[in-house]
Length: 245
Image 1 (cartoon, rainbow, N blue to C red):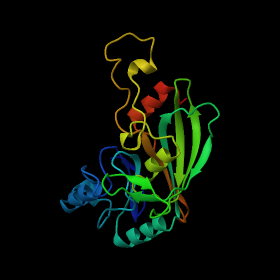
Image 2: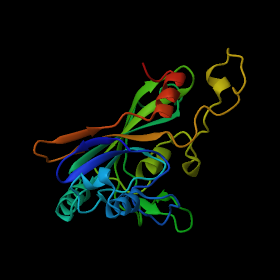
Image 3: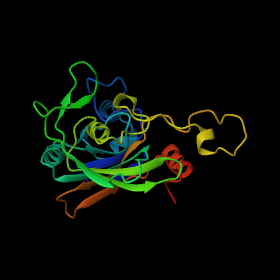
């Protein structure tokens, strides 16, 4: 996994979809905490030379999400970074694809529905009675004539599946996110109706089109902002949908 940024106390890695940052009851996928520490203990040179006594994820990131994964390299840094995260002293910017709204739909909005884990399903649900506070600022940054839109979601703290749940509440569920009613990926033929070749009926994208593009650690010395470009298959989807330059 590519290293996005690093200091003596932490390292930021580019997390692909399909792996979690840490073990979580809802997940069956492998987690990066366990894998990194197993390789560190095995003396893998690429990890030993990072000068870490351990690797511990600062925040939990759903396996379906790609993007910035931040790991502390010692216990002191872990305590500091998790305290910053829990106190809302960081900023996170997600990007996701969804179906275009009807004409006149709002280009920006804030979700403030408290969230609560479902008692049976592996998902979050809004609950004003028992849910915990959660806030997300949404902004539409591109829309195409093909019926799709690219949105940003900004938070200063997030819970498991937080952005996915709030996107559904605001009626802009993430493409491919069947757990929250997200639209299915279009076929290649849907995006290229004039083309004639084999394979055009296959989906143009597999997975959930949600990516953690930026993490800002505040306060820093100086403030540190970590960027991560979308993975290749998501960039290709955005281009085919007319949502990127």
